[in-house]
Image (cartoon, rainbow, N blue to C red; front, side, top):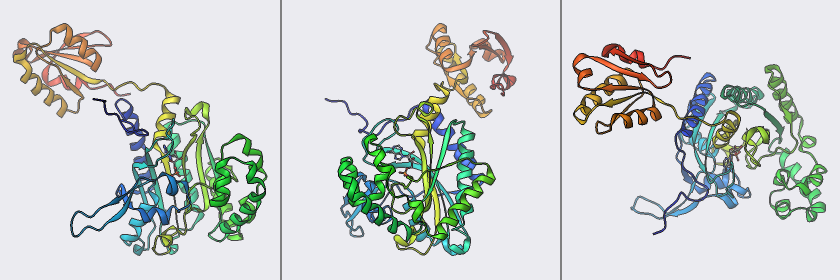
Length: 434
Ligand code: AMP
């Protein structure tokens, strides 16, 4: 029988790498809490219509990459429905915002999420079909100040602090403005017109996008197309005054906070809902270990998204961090992750001491120690070998130790062996504080 494997584009995350995943997620939670965000958890699948309307029918995500199925009714109360594994989480958060009438509080909603997303893309390093995003959204009625450029800057400043806190070096922030809901169609019309002349000399994807979604041409990475793309009209020249003022205010606030950035005219991003500010944090390839996938995270404003999916006016801005790419970058920048050693390995000297070892382990664990319990059937040599792989110390538990209440502890690194009263053992075994 052929062996079963994880499906192409998905993978198992194993220790010790999962320790890095946990560190990234807990750093995100800590930093986001400082900016007063709360966590939201939305379902992993949604009505297909949510993404078709929110993300946009012509985007690569919706037209090619979604995992969609027809859910047949199983009970009378069920309806046949087209469902989709979420390819991103902003649409789901905005759906929840509308469904729970969060705007009625009159306050801004600051929500973050952590979880898997699904896109049927061609898998490569840093690009998977099940991948993980850590994201946040600031959304609310205009009366709560949701359109203010200060939120754009605050979010970017938060992200800079997050990457710094994690220890990611050499990151670069790119920003742009894609204008208002009226600027963008004006620009797209001009771009489509300009592409008519040059598209036949471009790659197949660009030829198709020139018609279906001209903004996507600006994302093309094919080297031969780059000189042509440089000659295309720039969105900056088609922004109305309000969008220009908004963008200038974002930049001024970033300058005031000392967050450095570059303006990238080509940063239009792949989702239809973006308006005004768009941004991306990248790491350079040599430092990041990401190969072609050098975008760590991306996001932007979506002032019309709520209305696109049938909700009230609720401007917002958000981002999604590619957690898989953060892990790859941290691994490339800080080297191998070594597994965490237990504080102690308890070696019962004989099977009759197995239960006593379990009781001792319970005592230590309740005192906060990380403990591995050995096996009384092991010879002493095997206990030492196993203990050395798993823990910093070995605690020998024989009849003598049990009777006398004195434990024998050996530290593997120093080779020092000591006898210690059982009551004091836990504090002696605790990892030294750094
Ligand atoms: P997006 O939702 O397309 O704006 O992407 C936001 C971030 O998610 C990107 O900058 C990547 O870091 C990450 N990302 C998007 N697609 C994938 C994927 N297929 N595999 C891994 N990470 C991804």
